[in-house]
Length: 173
Image (tube, rainbow, N blue to C red; front, side):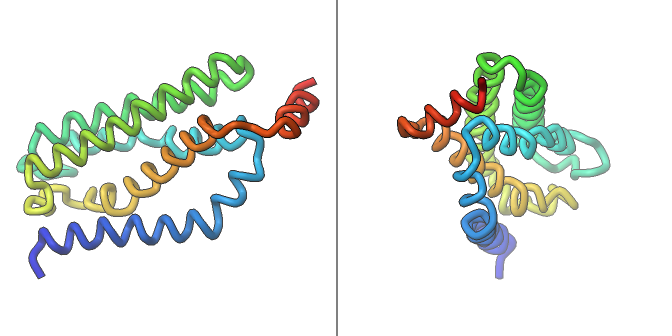
């Protein structure tokens, strides 16, 4: 099997495995939480996105990793991680919290979509060896990031029932 096919197969299987885990263990729990707590849990996961800076760390990835992919991926992850941390830090100031939640999710999704575009543009599957040990990031970490961004947008965009709004307003009192 070619390296390109292996990379693509593993990426698809990464999504499949995370969707199964998410459906069985995470989705019902997030849906049972109030929207604020669900977004805090998602922000906590994304606060580790600073780890993407590894794509520009000499000696960890190969110098053959295309800079057009590595630099954008590294700084897009850093920006998303910092925004997620700011959301967590601003939890006591709800309007600011919600602003950072929207920001880290928008920046994060744009980052991942542009990373996919760059991966295709620079033929990353054929150069997968240049990722070195960081090969695990697009295969294991990126799928759960994208899935949780989709979940975050679901929670941001879904209308709350009147009963849920009443319950949340009572809890805030």
